Every structure is written in C-alpha cells, then in structure tokens.
Amino acid sequence: MIDISRNKLNDKNKEILTKYQIYLYTERHMADNSVDSYILDIIKYLEYLNKDYSNIVKDDIYKYLEKLDKDKLSVTSVERKIVSIKSFHKYLGRFHNIKDFAINIEHPKFYRKLPNTLTIEEVEMLLDIKLETPFDYRNKAMLELMYATGLRVSELCSLELKDIDLENNYVRCIGKGSKERIVPYGEVCAYYLSLYLNEYRPLLKKKYLTENIFLNNHGKKMTRQGFEFILNNIVKEKGINKTITPHMLRHSFATHLLNNGADLRSIQVMLGHSNLSTTQIYTNISREVLRENYDLYHPEYKKKDDN
Image (cartoon, rainbow, N blue to C red; front, top):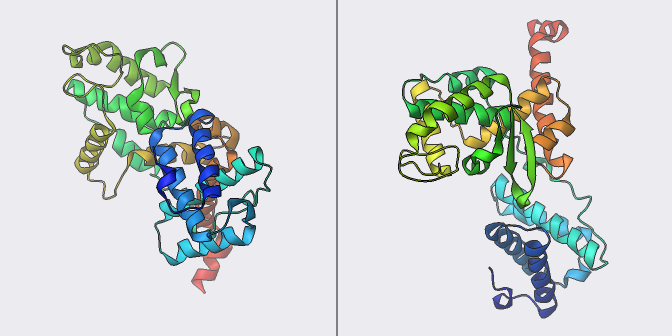
C-alpha cells in the first residue's frame, strides 16, 4: 500500500486521497496492485495541477491530457491514467458533492488505439494443434476455451473443477473487482475440454492435490507466464509471423462475435466489462473491417481506382 503521507501534496489533497484509497479497497474491492496504480496516477495528476482537488475544473483536466501527450507516454499508460482520473472525479462527485468535470471527458482520438486481433484464419491455424501427448490436449483445451469464452489469461489459470459445467457448456469465472460471471462455450470447445478433463488431466496431476483445471508439467496450477511460453511456442511452430499475446484471443473472441451479428450488450456481459463504453471499442474494429470491405469490393470504388 502506498504511503500517501510521504508525497508532496498539500494536506487537503492527502486527506481526500487517503479516503479514496480506503474506498478502492473496501467498496470496489480492488487488488493491491490496481489500487497502487490508481493512487500513483492521481498523485501525479494532483502534483501537476498544484491546486486543491475541490478547485479542479474541466480545463485543468484537458491541460493535464495535453501534458501527457507532450511527454509521449505509451497509449496504454495514457489510457490507464484517463481511467484513473475519471474514477477519482466520479468518487468526488458521489461522496463529496463536487461536480464531476471528468464525466464527459472523452479519450482523445490519438489515444484510441484499437486492440490487436487475429483473423479467423489465424485463429484456425493457432488451434490446429497436433495431438500426441497429454500436454498437447491440455494446450488444445486451453486455447479452445480462451477463444470460445474471451476469458483473461489470469481467469483461465484460476479456473477450478467446480467452475466448469460440462453438461450445459458453461464456465464460471471471477473477474476484475471479484465479479462473478457465467459464460457459455460451444460444442467444439466442449469436446476438447471434456477429453482433457476426463482422460489427460489425471495424467498431469502427479502427487499434488489441486482443483485447478489446467496444470503445468509439475502437476501444479498453470501460471500466466507458463501459458504465454506455451502460446509463443505454438505460434513459432505454426510459422505465424505475428506477435500474439493471450489478450489477443480475448479481443478476437469479441470482434468475431460482433462481426457475426452478436449484440454489444451480450458481449459486454461475457467479457465482464462494467461499462458498455469499454466494449464499444470493438465496434470501431468492425467499422474498419466494413470500410476495408467496401473499398475492396464496391464496384463504384473500384471504378475510381481504375481511372
């Protein structure tokens, strides 16, 4: 936990930030690392503005965003800071009767980096694993489940036997903020998941007693790092000339659902997003796909290119 009393803020800002820190722990049930990130972001924010939190106006927020742009921070860092600022001002509005000037602050267009996704063909290549060893069947089940449900890699690794409903093809997971959600999966995933659980997971258990579904070569719980190592090896074996991260499977899950007619609200629930606005970034990807297809296939556009 960050010791707020040791930073350079004035006493009034230290006091409100301490209350906000307690709120993140007790009301939002956030993990230590997440709370620390939020608090550090707001400390830097308040230090730059150099004024009491109660006197902040909308122009101050925009000035800080301009400063972040000049500092050439990564897209991910800036996005996180904006989320932190919006959360802080929402807290001030809700509990301290201070107008929330950040509620209508939009993420600047130059920060709207679309998530990287895989094409359906790339997903098919990735999932086309030669099944020979128990580890192959485990890897196949892991990748099929991630793509079928959009789980985060941390959620996948934390799954226990009680979280899978093999009869009805549902998985239960605990996401960010300790929020539970139930996500369905399809028949292909169901087949390989059942095959792994019934025939190959028992071979990986060894001497350890564990309820975790996916086990490493020591018979212990699969880790995030272990999954990433496995994924990287599969990508190399397939000769896919692209950096693929676990989160790209989650992005691909959402994007492919949307492109094939799923409604945004359903995708939001399956991804475990608190706000629909978080899910709406996938509509930007769909619009880009539509634009590319229009440019490629519309006869009038093709005539223009021919002239």
